[in-house]
Structures are given as structure tokens and as C-alpha cells.
Image (cartoon, rainbow, N blue to C red; front, side, top):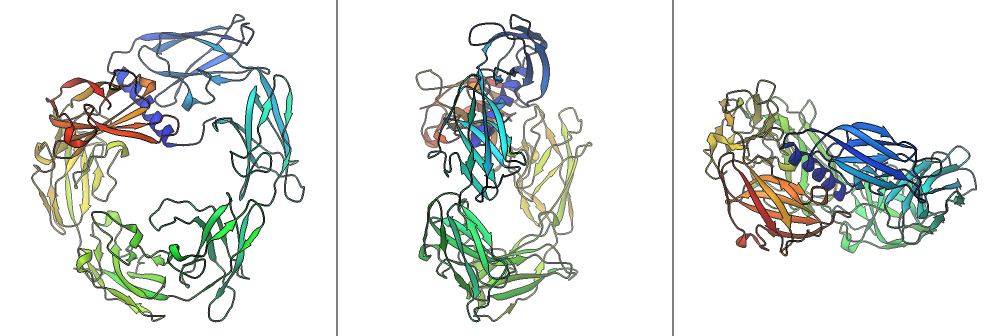
Length: 629
């Protein structure tokens, strides 16, 4: 079983992939992994092991131990990193080498190597889960975690509410989930306050429990004028620091029924605000207390059990409608999304806190008509965004290219607003072929008109990118304008190239795209160079966590990466780089939590101004000793 996804897990995956990348630079030769499996008394254990490639979790080989516990897995590649799973028995717990509960936390090994493993004795956890009425709960998830909170195993309750799990001797905590109910043993609502259970060898540890009512926000939603109940209004319970552009998750959610009543179970006791949004787009979204300013919202204290009542009345909002057309043919344009902003949005900062939250938008249909409902009185700027593949550029109302030139949309009371037609200029097309230095087509290469290298994303994250087919051909439909494109292939050892072979984005000759016209642009990708070496602390010791490296040209273009950590002994090999001059930014992560613990620049500088410039020739591999401050 794998533990829950985390940033640390993503970094680990990249590190494991890097281990294979580094190893593959040398020729692979057949090799073996061997080992001995014993029980706590030192006696050999007859069991089996499975070997997986660390970079992509692929099954490679299996082997079974003899009566002495000895095993050998052959046919492996010398220099390739693997992870090894050791099967358990009825009395001994399975594990990943070395004493890991899952593949992600397993220690990778490179053959030839000998692995000694001691399997821990097991006991059984079992219990019965019942609901608030004492009836058995069927199909609930039961997760067992260790004392550090790391996932160990899980089970599901049977129709009679029973469950069972075999685990190694030790101390654990148990979480029960049957949405929307979530509870820890015994009748606790957080890991920190949960009871621990101790499992002993060969014994059964019982953990029966019953779901209890959690803290819940309840209430009735009504029309502010008539007092009539409102259905389809959803209440979300948020921490008091909620903002429209935050990543703060709600801790409770519930929608009103035909009687206007809602119920939102809260996962964690605390002080919160409640946000009300009408899903049908009729009534203006508000926070508890009737305000649209979260800072002025009524707060509610939710305990571990019991109901807190928050009734809310809501006012009807205005409706804004408009129509999107092709500027040349005047044909309706479908798929245009509207958005309202009460202040400056961007670029370059894209301040989503100015977005008019709680409104309901509908993109334009075949008739070109779009709709914005539940709009409160106010003055707004409207941004209209066509579908990314359409080639039309987004615009502000009324046909403005930037927000500072937008015509304000004024909403007064319940007066609906009908806007002028938005006329979109059709885009042009950039097409061409990407080949290598031998003239062979490069399939799967990316071309980005904005000059942005895909990096760890694997491809462009905007509307200006396209990928080559098996013949190396690409075609991108884009709004008219001037662009500085780049081509790259992250799967081949080819250096990214700006249009015309320029070394930086700034020196790239602009490519002009004209509406309805086609511009031809070919690229040649040559073998790349690499930065290789090892990352270390300032005194030469191992760093305190995983490290990601970002390579920039001296003019600031993001052009390469590497990832390294304990799985690769902090050795690294960057992605393919063109010839040029670069600086290297380093970010250090805690390998367990994924939290950033520091940033620096090569070599040992705490800021960009002190970074050492690295010059790389065409196809050159340059070895570096990289020091952290």
C-alpha cells in the first residue's frame, strides 16, 4: 500500500527517476541482488521477495528464500536503482527494504548488493464500527497509521461492521472514514487527540468504536424579502482567513433542501465563517451575517459535538448578459467564459482577491450568448476568455486588450445589464517541423510561442503550445501578435532551442502572427550538455534534505532542472542544456514533509546577486561540487 500523496512523495518520485537517469548514462550490465530473511530470533524465514525499478515502480523480478532465509534475484542491471518488497507470513509482517511500510519510503538499492532483513512479529487489530444509533457501518474505510502519522495499512468494514488488519507489533492510531463522517479511535476528531493501541505478538487487539455526532453547522436559508425557503444554496464552512484566491479548504459543506434547511458537518472544532452560494445563480453569495466581506462575517464556534445554528437570508442579484462574435464574419462564438473583477487583476501579478466570488457564470453557447448571474450592485471590469484552442485572444469589455482600457460594467440593484457584443479577432497559425541535427524528425517535441520551457510540468501550461506528431510536425493556432518561440523535447537528450537558435529569449528574433495567416517556423534540436555532480552542505557533509535545482540563463530564462536527495546520494544530472551561461538556484526540502527549508544559489550564495555563473559548451557535460550555505 502507498501512503497518502504529498509534496515529499512527488519529490521522492523525481529523485528515484533521477537515480535511473544517472545510472543509465553508463552501460548497464547483468547484476544480482541477494539477501537473507530472518525472524527476530535469527532463524531463517522461507518467503518471497519482489524487485521493482525505483524510477517507475515497474515489477522486474522475484525470488524465494530457502530454509536458511537466503535468496538471490538475478538478471538485474548494474547501476540501476531498485526497491525490494519482502513478503510476510502468518506470524511475521511484510515490509519494504529497509523496514519501510510502503514503496515510497523504501530504501533504494543498486546491485550488486546483499540485503539482510529481519521481519517483525505480527499481531491482529480488529473491531466493530457502529453508527450513532448503534447499527453496524458497512463499507467504511479503516486506516492504521503509526505513532508518527505514517500510513501502515487499511481495511474496510463488512456488512456487520467488523474489520481486521494484521500489523507488526507496535503502537498505532486508527482513523475511520464513512463520508461525511470521519473519526479517530476512540471517538476523537484529530490524530493528536486519538487514543493509541498497542499490538503484541500473536495477540488480538480489539478496537470497537461508535461514530458520534460531530460539531455541525445547521440552519435555514430564506429569501430576504419574502421569507420563503431557498433550495440549492450551498453552505461552506471556512477558516476565518479565507480569501477568494487562497488555497484554504473548507472544513464542512452542505446544501439546502426544499425547506431551505442545510447541514454541514465540521471535521475539526474551531472558529469559522460560513459562506453561502446559490447554485442556480439567482441570489447574491454572502458570508454569515449577510456580508460579502469575510473580515466582517459573523464567526461561529464549532465544538467537537453538537449543532450550531446559522440562519441566513439572501437577496436576489442582477443578471449580466452579452454576446461573443467573430469580428470578421460576425458569426456567434461559443465557449467564451466571462469573469468579473472589482479591482486590478493583472498581469503581471494576477490578483485573484479582486475576483467577484459567489457569482454564477455560463460560457457562451452556439448563439454566442453568455450569462453572469447573482451579481450584487457594484462596478466591475469584465474579462472574456475564449477556449484556449480557438486562437482568439481574451479581451476586456468593451473590446479592450488591457484592463486599464476596459469599460466599466455598472450594476444597480436588481436591474439586469445587457452588454454590447464582444467582437473577437480570429487568430493565425504557426506551423513547422522539429528535427535533430541529422535532419530526423523529432516526435513528441513541444513548441511554445511564448518562449516558456516546460520544465517539470512536461509541457506548456498555456494556450500557446503544441506538440509534434510522428513526422516532427506541429501546428499552433494563436492570437495575432509578436512571439519569441522555443522548442524542446524532455524525453530525448536534446537541448531546448529558441527560434533561430538564439541563446536567450531576449535575443530571439520575434515571429509575427497575423490573423487568419499561416507562419512557417522550423526548429533544429542539437544534443544537449549537462550539469552533473553532487550537492553538499558547506562543510562537505550531506545536505539536510532533498534538493531541486533550477537552471536559468543569465538573462533570467528558466531552461533546465535537476532533482536529488538521499536516494541518489545527492548526485545529480540536469536536463539537456544548450550552450551558454547559466546560474543555478537550489531549493531544499524536508524529505518527509515536503516543506521547503531553504533556498540558495550556486555556489553557496543566499541570493541571485552572488550567484556564480556557469559556462557550458555545446554538448559539454560539466561536473560541479555544489555547496549549500
